[in-house]
Image 1 (cartoon, rainbow, N blue to C red):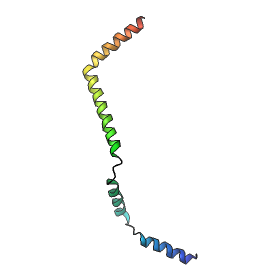
Image 2 (image 1 turned 90 degrees about the vertical axis):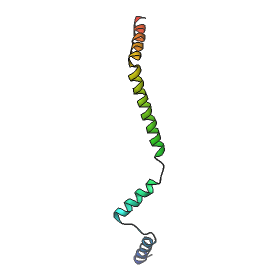
Image 3 (image 1 turned 90 degrees about the horizontal axis):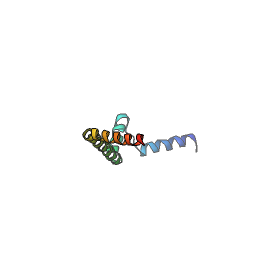
Image 4 (image 1 turned 45 degrees about the vertical axis):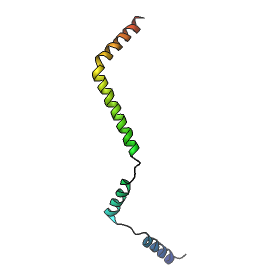
Amino acid sequence: MGIWARRVNIHRRRQDKPRVPGIMARVAARLRLLGRDDGLAITEYGMLVAFAALALIALAAVFGSQISAWFAAKTGAVTTV
């Protein structure tokens, strides 16, 4: 295949698949990504972890002094043995 034939083939391939220049290509790519739901599971797990963290913080705030007294009693029992 000569150099002219290669140039014609490249030109034909470009005509078959029209390209959207510059910013429109980026906008089109972003719109294609919006239709995907791959990130939903990650978001749900993130929300679950955040809820668990908030629950632990609330429990520590409510029962903090009782937990501290319980650990102090257990520590005292271990050191006296």
